[in-house]
Length: 186
Length: 182
Image (tube, rainbow over all chains, first blue to last red; front, side, top):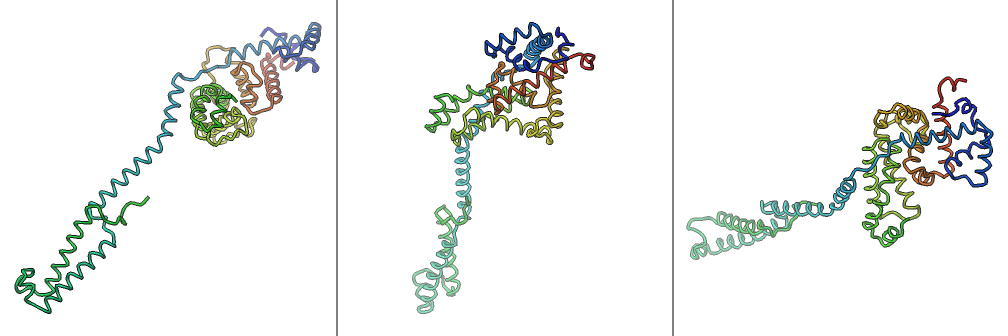
């Protein structure tokens, strides 16, 4: 800096200190600016201060970096925003995956509800009871229709009937029409 | 606030408003972030994060504050979080704190190829953090006190005072040692 350092050490006149800054920046009102310039013509301290102020201003403007944004700034921002806006699609994909999982569970036979099992048991009991009853009242009747083999007991007949009902019910409901109480929850 | 942005916001067209906000504010947000973080890459990341936050929060913007004031506040908070990540002890509530100044001086300021320039930047690092920030932003904003005041969320007089004290101190520090001792 080419400033008069000794005069600068003394500092500017207190009454002109702010005015010198505004004069340098060109924001000082015209009338006041004239008065300050007149004062500076006779004051080495204020001249030194104004000179140093100008040099410092130029040096700072030159020294301080003025970086610019990368050319891909907008593209990267758009990518981030796009990721945020795709959240609903992700939710839909997750729901679809859960439905697929539930379908697989049902088709593996895990989709039977307790209601289905109880209905099958009740139906089997009724059918079995009719068979046992007929066998007790008319032992040869079922054999005459060819429904029970010769020499088979009523208990064995009942068991076969019950098993057949369960097998049919299981096959029907395992195809995916069962209640769904064992499905995935939300 | 730009009338078009205001119109879109009033009509709930937040995506369209955001499309206008980005070109209007991205560079200002970046310059403010750079004045705080003093690192180009970090400032750009902070600018990205700020605008993403703006996009998320835009539906909740009620217009009680000016849009620029609101965006600058988000920018300053984003940068504050970044500074805290770097140095957990940094307190932006007290920009003059020793920790804040140490953190500031630890951040790179640019290539070191001009001794006078390097010396001036070194002197600048000796100022309180809030004065440094005001000086950096003042020159980034083409010497606009109004722009600095809006970005920092400070009254115009406070910004002028900060810059006045910063330049006075820099002139004192720039004097040769023998003159300082006289």
